[in-house]
Length: 249
Ligand SMILES: Nc1ncnc2c1ncn2[C@@H]1O[C@H](COP(=O)(O)OP(=O)(O)O)[C@@H](O)[C@H]1O
Ligand SMILES: [Mg+2]
Image 1 (cartoon, protein in one colour):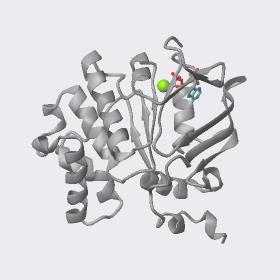
Image 2 (image 1 turned 90 degrees about the vertical axis):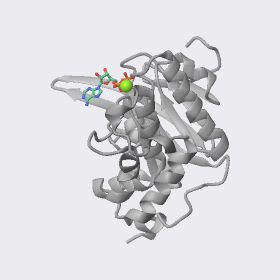
Image 3 (image 1 turned 180 degrees about the horizontal axis):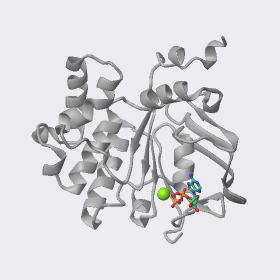
Image 4 (image 1 turned 30 degrees about the horizontal axis):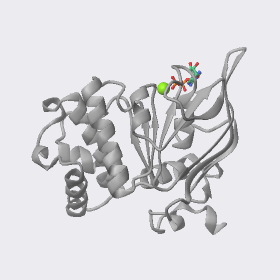
């Protein structure tokens, strides 16, 4: 077996690539959905590079294919054509089982809905990915405490999700996404369920994690407020990606 294609071997490498080196690259991504006789061409040749330490926004109207692209970058879906390179590894050469291992070790996800488990506490929800990966409880708790400290949430460790506000639940979802020290956080409409002030709080937190911890992230959203928080903005329209600098997209 070719060693470069074994995620187990690669996973022992440090999870912090050099600054300004590509963390993830999409190369000529196409995605077509077949709906009976109809073909829906959603992505038509997407190229994207996200470097270490970058905070990137992906905007575009509802239905433009933002989630489709994020899911492909995050190995939750496969493209019809094209490649995704994560940490110098071409992802779609792997089986689904190997991809899920790469996903658990190297990627962090935040979605519109927090998906916290209601019967577990903040700390238990945060360390769940580590426990599932087989880390001993004591080590998992230490990592969980560290990441909850980074987001100033140590005072709510034993609270259950129902006792938190919407914005606080999303903060815990961010902690859970960070606990594996992923190469990149992929966030799909992380403020989609929040009011304006909670959205601002969450985006400020993400920005702070980017600035102080160097966390690389892609934020997919139709919330134009995100423009104030990111280094680069892309706009998805007609299946193509456009880099944009204006405030109105
Ligand atoms: N699994 C699927 N099967 C068929 N069509 C899909 C599927 N997923 C998404 N689509 C379609 O692809 C288009 C883009 O969807 P999506 O990526 O969710 O857009 P966005 O996140 O920008 O709102 C939409 O027209 C949607 O209906
Ligand atoms: Mg979407």
